[in-house]
Length: 425
Ligand code: SF4
Figure 1 (cartoon, rainbow, N blue to C red):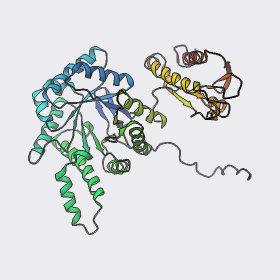
Figure 2 (cartoon, rainbow, N blue to C red; figure 1 turned 180 degrees about the horizontal axis):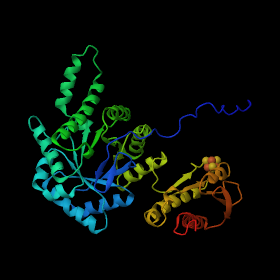
Figure 3 (cartoon, helix red, strand yellow; figure 1 turned 60 degrees about the vertical axis):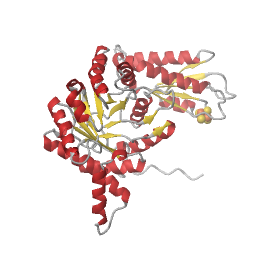
């Protein structure tokens, strides 16, 4: 074995650590939530109920909000859904849920807002897709109508361009211009440029019409990871509008989670992005709230925000053939997630708690010492004892049938001592 290298001399700069400073953006108020500027990166989600079905939509918005969604978008696609919006907002308010509701408009938003002033008033933001706001000569007038409603009702908008509904007239024009270039770009670069121009030109038009830039959020969503990163890096350099990040049509299950996390984490690390949505296709029977959990976990594991205590758990291997530690990791994560809404009010700061559930003595004590509170379960052939480490020190050893219950009680006690009203008294 070669001798250990000495530490670098103290004159050498430290290697970079952590995300780049957030890009400076204009802050937008969406109801009671700030997006951009110095506000933390905001988690948002979208319902998949028929908005006209008031009871189902209220129920799902409430679930998304309880899971931690700070903004919720609903589609507003027909007169029935536009008429339902004010009643949805009213029912949520009666339940004590003040989450801003965003209306997602395509094709007919100008008519729906004109015919349902109560909807225009109840929504906290309008999402406008410049690729399908209107076609031909109607495009500019219908876009202007939507912006005028935003001005009239004092609402912000998101100008959300999307790869799947790109403004075809603009794309064709840029393709034609590209053919005349001495050194033409490849087609994918032209399409990325068309997407960015669609958003930026629409935003410039909205400002010209009188909507303050502080009421505009931009997005340019694509479904490929590298394309998304390239588009947002470019967009971030070319404007100071607040940016909504999301990989569109990310997909189902682990593919959707991995693709979204891969794309968004690169951008967030570069300081790009003011609000995020994870566009997961739910697995059959899976809750819609999964997209909120993934968004929160992405931000928390990157150290950008804290929402709920995080459990570090080893993957398990042949040294621990029992499934007990997997079950304990699940019980602990579910317990702290379920307690968090209450702790958020009664024990502020508990979201920063770190926990470890480890399968054997190899990494168990070490990882448990790094956590605020950790447990090292006995691996195969080890004595049936589970030492618990609190603040880096061995505290107690649990044995027998009730390890899960006793460990959860230790966590609750720790939260009470460290974050409760009498903490530090
Ligand atoms: S801590 Fe033990 S059980 Fe867990 S992965 Fe490492 S060696 Fe395997």
